[in-house]
Image (cartoon, rainbow, N blue to C red; front, side):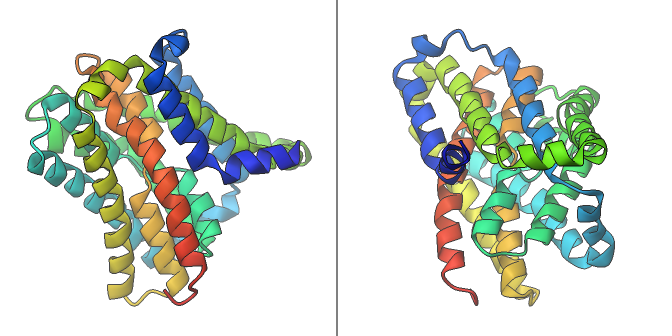
Length: 309
């Protein structure tokens, strides 16, 4: 069983890509999966993240605040700005612009920690950045979306704030509490969590793609290109910032991956909950979920083979 779970987590990029292709080609098969279950599914992933964290993991915020502050500033400036620039450059319509901006304004995803580990980067810094950016997300994500997209669409900042609290923060806190009182049971279950998260991510992608398959086939190439550029530019600029600030190679890798890999599942969930008038707003998050797992696996191989990069 452990070998199967390791296989699933090691090939998450292939799994998510397969889920996306099947949902795109046979959307009617997956029509029983409703978008309303996206938020609970995302809560499962966040709960799993809480089970893998310790309060000690957040000590990095106090012991190495400079690194975490640099990473979080890069996270909440580079990706939102890139999203807005790309949306304007490629003249995306209102719905897709909202979706791309949502992806850019979300915190780092849990997959970034796995990729940083595989890339032989600074895992403690990656976990610290993910944790802090997730804690900041209830305030910063709604405000950034309002600032970037609020002039063209109605953004309910308070409703989005509450959604992130319920879908992200609460499950993580519950996970931390469960680990505190049942450490042995959690330790035995931890080996299966990456595989569970991988399957849940693939399911979320399947739900979103199957619900919007016709629209995606009709005009999806541009948004795929935009999402790929968004991710690649984020990875590259994150690395460049680390280099310009004379960070060590392992720190540069962590910042690069943390900036470039977003919690795209959260973006799709927020789009479903708060932008129902724009169904296509869920698509950028779904495509990002597929692509950043593929690019993450590739960048991990590049980084891991060169310790001084």
